[in-house]
Amino acid sequence: MSLRVAIVGATGAVGRELLQILADREFPIKELIPFGSSRSQGKSIQFNDKTYRCKALQKGCFDGIDVAFFDATDAVSKEWAMHAAEAGAWVIDNSATYRMDSEVPLVVPEVNGHLLKERSPEKNPKDRLIAGPNCTTVQLVVALKPILENWGLKRVVVSTYQSTSGAGSAAMEELSRQTVAMFNQSELESKVFPHQIAFNCIPQIGSFPKPGSDIDPEYAGYTSEEVKVMKETRKILGLPDLAITATAARVPTFSCHGESVIIETDRPIDINEVRAVLEKQDGIIVLDEPEKSIYPMNVTINGDKVEGATGKDAVYVGRIRKDPSVKNGLNLWIVSDNLRKGAALNAVQIAEKLLKA
Image: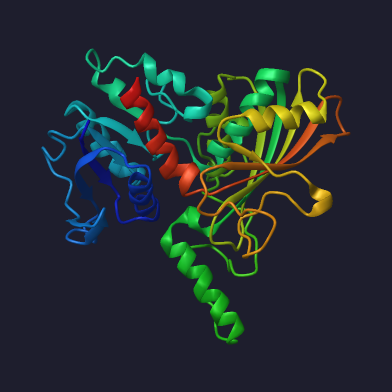
């Protein structure tokens, strides 16, 4: 099998990661067609020792495409994703546009990949459209799945510690510039974030609802990022009434998102059993020897006994312990590379499953 593959948003942070993953996993590509914004048109893209030029989205541009990855803005996906599906391509969209659409599956292959077998694109072009979740949701549901299956889920409280890469290349550059400026005792500028990010934590990712806006009272006071995590987790796990709350914070790191997760289960838990079940879950690596300072982290230096999550495919879970404040309580610390498993890798895994379905 050899495919014509389109990447919308090929020059962005996720797009670049996607290209590397496609190459690493030897995805069967006959022809690569990269698309970009007006600023990216004509830019050269290197893939498998070949040079490609970024093209503009236009009528008919998806004709003959087998798989189209969308890693662009919501507006771009809203305008073009269905065009690609109607042209006959499998469309894997990482924007928020179709995530909560009841006709579109929101997929993390290790959790609900079986939904991909239920598509009937010959009857409905929209069945060619698959949504990828928010990066923080991906790592969360991979860890929650075995807990749900073995002990049930009553309540989930998640606090996220999200790197600047989640806000794109410009955000990472802002952290770098501000860090250098601080050491040089120079003036700092904040353009991407509402506040200084260097050596700081910002308890806001996404936007807050404006006063007087029409919003579900359940989500009043929550940012758009926090609402995504709550809604998407319910949809992916098939638990529309799951009690879940989220707080999302931006932290001054370049890669990976960390999550502190407090879980209340339906049935009593045994920590050793929890650890064993997590170790068997596809996509998870357990690092849980805190007495030896072994637990999930974003980055580590050469010779460190812990494997940092940056550049890795797994969801790392550790600090596994009981929460004594509730009857059946469990605490976890989760770290994953948000550009890989949180976005690009998850999209490629969806495509691989579609080809096997």
